[in-house]
Each structure stands twice: as C-alpha cells, then as structure tokens.
Length: 621
Image (cartoon, rainbow, N blue to C red; front, side):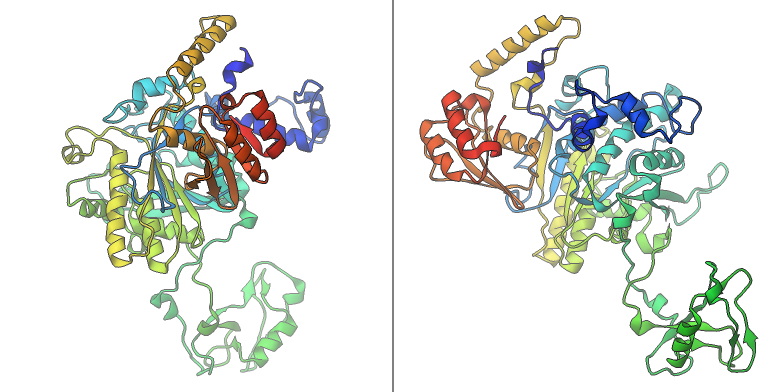
C-alpha cells in the first residue's frame, strides 16, 4: 500500500530499529536494495552448520507471529486521568489502565534500558484464568470496539484445556510481552516471573530464549501454603515458583539479605579471641590445585591431608600467615582438621540468599489475601494476591537501589505498588513504580462488584491509594502519589484509520485521504480540553517518560508553548494547529534546544526558518 497511509505518529517499529542498528554496524551484510544478504550471512557463519536439518529448538504454532507482534508499532496512546490520580504533578509513580502489550510498546522508547526490576504475576494457565488475546487477523480497532470502550471493564474468556491450542495460546501471549520487558530492563536489571507447575517448564524454555540461558539466576520456590490440603488427589501442592533472570549476568549483583539474629548466633568465641565471635568454615575446596595440596601438622602433632579429590583453599604461604594471625582453628583439643575463623565483626555484607522462600520469611497466599481485605475493610476478596513481604524480598534480591524504577505489567491487586512504597518508608528511598492492569470486568456476584469496583484496574488504583494513605500517616515524606493513565485511541486521525483488505490500494488511499479531510473539518487535533492528551501522546512516542515535567512559557503570547524536561533532556513544544509568525521568531531564540511541533502547523517559509534555527534538533510530527 502507499506509504502515506503509514506515516503516523506511533511507538517505534522495533523491527526497523533493529535492522538499522545492524546495517550501521555491518553495512556489508546488506544488498544495494537495503535488504539483508543471505549469501553474506552464510559467508560470515561459514564455521557454523546452517543446514535446515534437525536441531534442538523450542517451537509452537504461532511463535514467529507472536515474536513479530512484539516489535510492530502501536497507534494507541496513554491519556492522563487526573481525577483518579494522586498528586499527579509531583509524583514519579505511574499506574496504567490498559492492555499491557500495547502499553509496553508505547513505553518501549521512553523506558528503553531504564528499569531496574520487573516483577510479573501472569495468568498461570490453569484452565480457570484467562489469556490475553492478541488477534493478528484483525486490526487493533477491534480491541477498541469489543473491549476498550466497555465502561464496566473488558469481558474476557478463560483458556480452557478442552479448547485446543492450550499451551500455544499461553506462549503466544507471553512471548511478545517478555521480549519488550527485556528491552526496557537496564543492563544490571532483573526480572521475576511467578508461575506454577502448569507452565513452569514452558516458561523456563521461553525465558531461556528471550533472556538467554546464560542469564538465568534461579528458579525460586515460594512456600505459598502453610498447611496441606486434605482433599488433594495425590500430593498437596504447597509451593509456586518465581523464575529469576538477569538482563546481563556479568552486570548484575544479587542483593544480600539482612543478617538475622539466628544467623548471628551461629558465631561464637570458643578461644576468647579479642576480635570477638567467629565461625569456623571449611578450609578445603573441590577445585583442585596441586599448589594447595600439602600436609598440615596440627598442634597435637597429627599430620592431616586434604580430603580425597580436594585441596586446601589457601596456599602454603597464606595458611601460615593465617596461622600466625590466629585465624586457623584446630578444635578445642588441637587435633582436628584445620578450619578458617570468620569473624562476625568482619562480616559487612548480608547473608547469601537461598532458592527457597519460606512463608515464615516472605508470607503465604492467605497473608496476601488478608492484606487486601484489611485495606478494603473486608469488602474485597481478591484471588491469589501475593503478600507484600514476598515482593519486598524479591526487590532485595534484585538489589534495587533507593532511586530505581520497578515495573509490574500484570498489576493485579497492586501488591507491587504497596511493596515499593513500604520499602521507601523503611529506608527513606525514592524508588518509583509503574503498574499496568487491563480493565478486566469483575463478576457481578462478587463482593468487590457490590462494593462498587467493576474492574480489576479499579482495585489496583484504590489499593495503591489506601496503602499510600496508611504509609503517609507513618512517614509523610514518602511519595505515595501516582499518575493514572488510560490506554485509548490516538488523537491523531491517521492512527484511527483501518484499511479494508477487500479494497484495492487505490481505494484505500482515497478512503484515507477522505478520512483525514473529515478530521480536519472537525478540528480533531486540538479540541477544547484535549491539549494535554495531544502533548502526552506526542512526547511519549518521541521518547519522553510519563513523569516528564512541563511548564508553559509566558513569553509566547500567540501560541501555547511548553518547556518539557525529562531528566537531562529538554524540548520546546508547540502542538497548536497553526504556528503564528511571532511564535516562529521567538522560537529561534531557543536554537540550542530540541523543538517539537506539528507538520500541518507550519508552511514552507516557517518550516525553513525553524530548520535554520534548530537543524537536526527540529522534530515535526
């Protein structure tokens, strides 16, 4: 089809972005027509077997289409919802109501390589929960028509095992979302995914592919139940899993756990050493070195050797240095195999975490449910919320710093938001969160619906609000606010045009032009009260974060002009439909700053003046 139809303001098309990066680095791999040369790829990989014979890989129906769907652009937008927000202008936290794949696409440019930790609790595919449907056979307009415009929430279906494509549907849902999650993680970032036995085997293989098996950190076991189920058919299942993957394992450092009194009690002072309590640790290691294989004579006169197939962890010189410093222990009788004294006073780091998350340390499923009920005064029963202690433990393992960003795009009841705020309350940190939750409809016979909550996203928002109020009462300086955004259709009419596959290209081009003409007549770009919507849509798709700061510049009297800042980035923005000549003259004074405006707002002369002032820093959409 004619390219004019696709010149819309959208989220990035990451397929094109990835190809552009490869072409910039290795232009010789491309033909004169700009296509990847298969012959050059084969020549580059001449030492590898590129035959189409049998090979080990994880395949399922729809995999390639699911992967492709991750990198296609989104034409939707995120509209601010000031009414449901808390302290919108000041807070750095965000809650988004919308389908998470579209949301991730819209966030992908602004938050590329910026997220320290992602935690998600996706549908477990038990046959009783739903799977987000990414229907590739129809345009995204179908989402708005069938789901997005439902005031009382999106109606979703369960993914029953009898429906066929049971695991396929789930994998096709997960893959594009994980691919985008990998993109927004920082190099030292980490992702946690909760799951149970139904899909843990598939999820492990999927995450190996998306994140790289070399970046696997752990398959954590969470003890979610504290008592067996007597009605279990075979064995009472008391645990779930949390898969943990780093973005780049060489850049990631796992967080240590705070030392407990129980751990400190393991240190004693059996020889009244003036340096205080110590603990004996094994002096032998499995990694064999001939230089560290030598006999040692104990104080009692007994000669000891390293255990079979092992050696000492210290060289002979290092051993005698430790011995001289009274850091070697031979037992009370001086006849035991030597061990190294580790002093409690010298243990500065916390404890090394283990792969089992016991409920006494991180809570169980009933604790999570109780936390929700208490916040809502027993008016809301939520299915399977995770306890706050579990999420705070994961944030500790992620080594989340005091100013890091945490994302949860299966927001659910909002546990992650509360966990981040609780952690900030404990240590005075300023961690931020972004939660995404689809406006899934709540059953009309439920307690939550009767209490006035018709969508799960409403519970997400309300829980964050109530938890924040409780935290603020204890520590007022904590940021307990959040900006609420809603996924909705674009302000730009180009993005709301759906071509008809049954019509010719020429007919679709004509229909598109007629669509734009009608839009201009209806002043769809700057309807009253929609200026902020236009601003956010444009800037987020240009790579500005949702927490950007904006101020209207008073020196511009003919048009509304904003200075927008996002960290160390600044832009001068005017999205009026017509740019006055006086405004153009005033704008040229900001030539060292990026300028963003509308194509249709400037004629050829104005565009030339702006390009002379801003050069490559001018962006017209």
